[in-house]
Amino acid sequence: MMRLEGRTATVTGGAGGIGRAAAIALAAEGARVAVIDLQKEAAEAVAEEIRGSGGTAIAVGADVSSEPDVEAAVREVVDAFGGVDIAFNNAGIIRRSTAVDTSVDDWDRVFGVNVRGVFLMCKHVVPLMAGRGGGSIINTGSGWGLTGGGQAISYCASKGAVVNMTRALAIDHGPQGIRVNSVNPGDIDTGMLRDEARQLGQDASVFLADAADRPLRRMGQPSEVANAVVWLASDESSFVTGAALVVDGGGIA
Ligand SMILES: NC(=O)c1ccc[n+]([C@@H]2O[C@H](COP(=O)([O-])OP(=O)(O)OC[C@H]3O[C@@H](n4cnc5c(N)ncnc54)[C@H](O)[C@@H]3O)[C@@H](O)[C@H]2O)c1
Image (cartoon, rainbow, N blue to C red; front, side, top):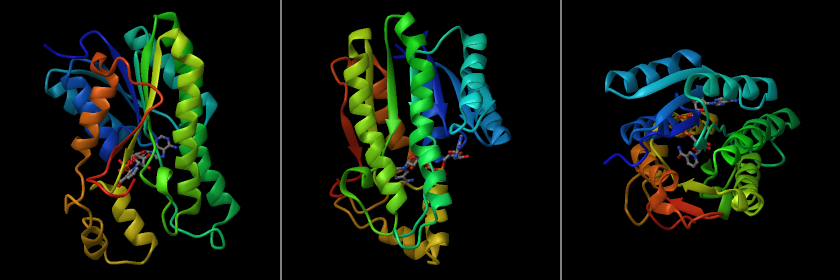
């Protein structure tokens, strides 16, 4: 039996690595999926892929740091599917720099997407979930949101905020039947890692080989994070809320 039959899910950053894998995995379990991303065309390609395998999906173009965009996106999802039961708030960006090297504009952009984006999605889906008797919110933090990491000051600060915002949301909305958890990946093989190598001026293959230095001796695949997201979205995790689930091959967080 499919685990998410009859549910509707939003996935922000759904055009990219982890979000794309999660959108596909949620749809494979029977959820109707809204693939929300800054890159509308790439989001449309993911929605098409889901429909091509017999699933139900729409693509929505939105910048999660903009409240008008988020409000319009959520309205579009409600018009298409009637409500929201699962929200995977996953869109995120990274800037690889220390405090000394980070511009205020970069700081604000990272917080705009990673922190305000998660807050705005929650602000607009929580009332819908509460009206339906509950729901499951999953926010993408990072191993570095729990431990810190080098040359990524704005990112580490923003992901720490996501982890603790998740706990605060779980406290506020548990009585409404809404569970809120964070999934915290270690190094996962996506475009973001290649972007980091570029920002640091490093060779991508050397950077990716370094990322495999952990107990399981490899990077993770987006689908391995997606499996954790499906579990947190499903009733199998019915007594889990406020948790920071680490998916990192061991040893970082
Ligand atoms: N890849 C990793 O190793 C890793 C590790 C820890 C945490 N994460 C987190 O996982 C999440 C997904 O990362 P990924 O590796 O799949 O990255 P990715 O760059 O492959 O995908 C991110 C997606 O988010 C979209 N996006 C960016 N800004 C947006 C905005 N303002 N509004 C809407 N969409 C926006 C991008 O267009 C892209 O499709 C991020 O929050 C990231 O911080 C990734």
